[in-house]
Amino acid sequence: MLFSCLCFGVHSFAQTSLDNIIQIDGVTMTADSLRAVPEVTIVVKNKNRGVESEYSGVFSLVCYKGDTLQFSCIGFRPKEFVVPKNLVGEYYSLIQLMVQDTFYLPETIIRPMLSREQLAYAFLYWRIPNDKYEIARRNTDAYVLRALAYTLPRDGRESQARLMQQQAREAVYYGQQPPMNIFNPLAWGEFFDAWKRGDFRNSNNPYSPNYYNNNSNN
Image (cartoon, rainbow, N blue to C red; front, top):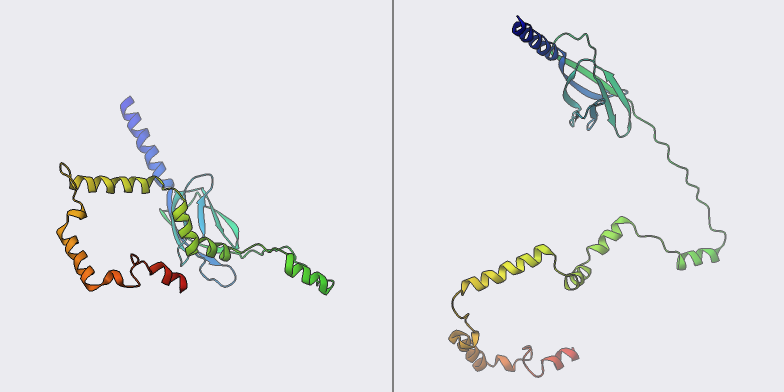
């Protein structure tokens, strides 16, 4: 008898919990023109659960009967909707109308300069702070980035990559002496061919004695 009572109580509690769950399918629209309001945040009050309406204003949310839904969006007044407890069924359709909110900006008073001398002084000595576009342009300047690349130390990722490259080069000639270009016959052949062609007598060759004199004159 005790076992039967426990099973009946658990079954009744589960049945009651399932009956209280409801799925709400709705759409958020403006109250004056009935246009869809996208990106409206719908949150269940006092619970860390919620959704966001799509571009067409459609949303879907699962909650309990009796919960309070909070609607909030930038430019609109926040709204609350209490899900009735006496709803029949597992689905409910909702059309939430959002009212546009009015923003009051602080007033700006523009006064003319008192004299031409003050205008000249302001034009020469006033330092107007740069806007975000100018700051971004300076931070992404090619010369600044090049200077930072030469002066800033390597971070952990760059140091690790350099070490891995060095170990990879050493692993290629593991157990043997790495080759040297001074004993490379192909390099010597290219050197003699360049010597016969007169490449070292060319003024654009950096090894030529007159290379730096010609560039300094230019």
